[in-house]
Image (cartoon, rainbow, N blue to C red; front, side, top):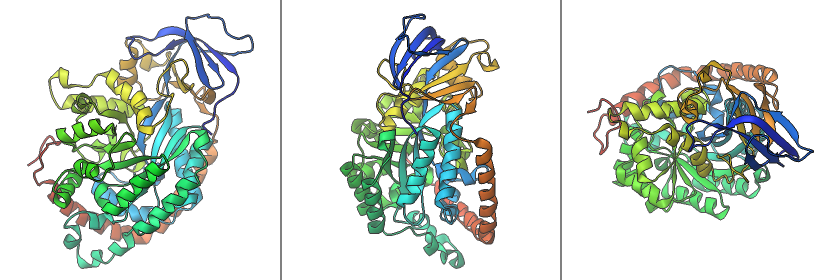
Length: 501
């Protein structure tokens, strides 16, 4: 569980990352009951009963924070080579069926284990069930994060309109025999879903372990006005956060324009959804006015560069977003569309995506800005206090990088090297709340060999169960791709592709 480790530990002889310092400097760190009590010059006096941790040849940085993932998508990892967001969503109702609470727990357990081993200590997980969220399902996700030892925000991903009915014109474009399957994809009613969410929020039992409940109305136009406003009302009633996918793809942006005569961001604001407790996942197709509105409302954006490229969603405007004053965080997205849970990789992708859009260096995001997004920005997006920095009084969520690994030869510029060079292979230890979760590259909280065998057994079972639906899903994907790719060829007020009409 994400709990503090009581007692005293003095971390000696490491290099401590500070964002305003070009190269980390030697410092010692005193941890008391899971909190950073003192960061000072090497050799400062420590309590006589403190345990000593030797950090020679190590760099210490705060735990990275994943602002957007889907633990339940583990089963789709590398299942297909070419896929758009819309073809992914078309098959989701079938992929979310026939999963037991244990299957759901296993999926989240693997994702959390991978994140911790790669230096990530907190995550915002949008978790989907079909047709309605259940207390047992969401509880299984929380228990997985608790078992690994991470901090987390878990948001049931919900809607009251099916994917096929949310995209204007898509239903009419489907052949009649495929259209007959759409009722199978409809989620539960708005009233039933809001009632289930109220029960989940009311009975949440994980907050004392820094695993918090939030709400995730999946995509604005997949929700009726009454439903998404009901989600926002519930979230504020219980002090929970809210996250939704906003203008992730051009198809979403055009759908919003057709349905509301405006952008999805503007419509969310009219519904009263935007605010400091709100995070927009992806936000690729936001206009400049949208960005200003997000900043004015104090909302956050989770930038998922890897999945944006993998799904062909377009180029996120990182420099414009930062200049507009929006809080930007970094996410990995789920394994079905980004294939791994590596925030080092996500930072590097974010850096390169910002650079490839223009030859003018002053329009690129700096490594410092991206590092800030993956730490401080992530903490704000998750609503977590006292994490994301190495400061007195903050929680001891620390990553120890082995400086004897080739990635750190030579060690020139600490923050730039974390963003541009590190890939997770140099992570030696990971600490959350003063408790060591990874020591000498070994995860201490989960038996990965036993876990891998359970996951492989489940994979075989799912593949067998999916057999009769494969032809249907292939035909649905073809029909959805034809219609949505044509829709994406239509003009929109902003351009986020290198080549578009």
